[in-house]
Length: 196
Image (cartoon, rainbow, N blue to C red; front, side):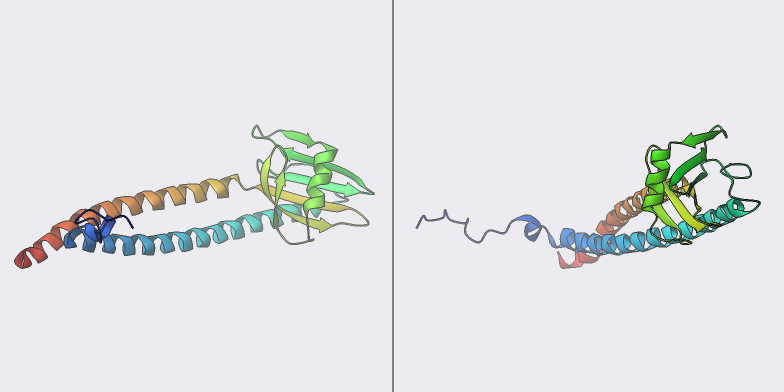
């Protein structure tokens, strides 16, 4: 068995070799970072649920407007930018959406059929990825006869708000940890000075 040079065996490495002052500060920062992470995750999930609830209410209201009047009209009047509406009658799918220029644009039948095929339930808002348009929150309603109408609003605003929230939370947390690290170092150094 190879012999270790004197002083090598049992030598501590990493944080175990840090001075007591540094280890105390690091421990406090790790605990604070863990607590901040939990708070950040919980607040992000709560914000997400709140934003989705508000968007779902808008989607349901838009869907009800689509169901009023004689028959089912695939039109965008009275709807916000980004509103998507698809419908099927007798196996034929059609769709329309409002562009960023507040203009009506047709959704290809293939895409409209794909959207309808991804809807798992009638009357319950759900997230659907629309090719070329992105993620939508959609709700399907059964109209007279075999007509199925689905109305949706884009999730762009929700996603952007969540991204800003996460970025802001991370920035504030890092800045807070930096300040606390500096203050903690000064306080621990002062308290441990009599023991030196």
